[in-house]
Image (cartoon, rainbow, N blue to C red; front, side, top):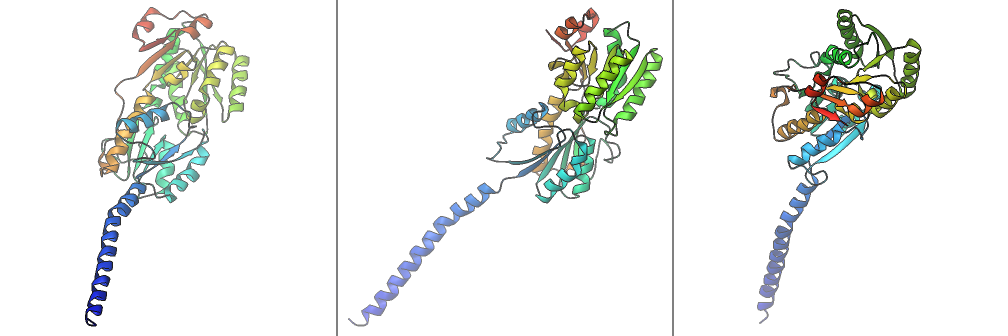
Length: 334
């Protein structure tokens, strides 16, 4: 009988060890699953506008269409410059220090800031100004960056021609731009060449802030300008409603680069759909998260440009829109 006790004790110890091992093995998949659930792919969003700029919602819609739900299977770290391009380098460094899996940036200056902040994190850009100095080529960008361009700057002359069609008596045109954006002075110069061929006089008005936008419109009134071309950049995009309202207040027919301005009350817009560009950027994010090399993905360019006319604004300004323009418009806002 005495010999049976050590044997019973050994059996109890073996039984307890077995139960402990079984519990540990049972918990292991749960722990591993919980760890995987918390390790979501992280997207860094470097916005040169404010969060309320409509195309950013189109970008999020694009992600949702591809099955990405924020907080469930993707995490988004966002930083916003609010139209102040000087903040981009600092914000890009913040996102790079977070070691996100991919960066989504807007504008060529957003791309420049991101490339200076990291040489390892893949970058997707949605830009409307030339990217030639930042990638090897449009067809094969190389490096860690790819994305889309809406080539808005190349359309400056076409917008001037459309404004002339809307206002046949046009002779003096104001061009509003932000000199802090390095692309706007060359864009203005391109317009001057077109203006000379159309016998139009251009006058440039600079604005680096919302207050300077007000001052610029006061200068336009003194100069007796008859029309306005606004060169889009993050500052102007962030104040599109203000620009539309000032145009109406000063009875100044204006043309803009993107339909968001016409939606806000601007007279007419001509350019690629920013909503399409930003929604399409989600496709690049998806490809890169699934292992694609960004340098092998061609930078996409738009094949269609939208002409949007705000007929209500035209009537307020006392303008009769030619039937030819109405017929070719992609949308007429009444």
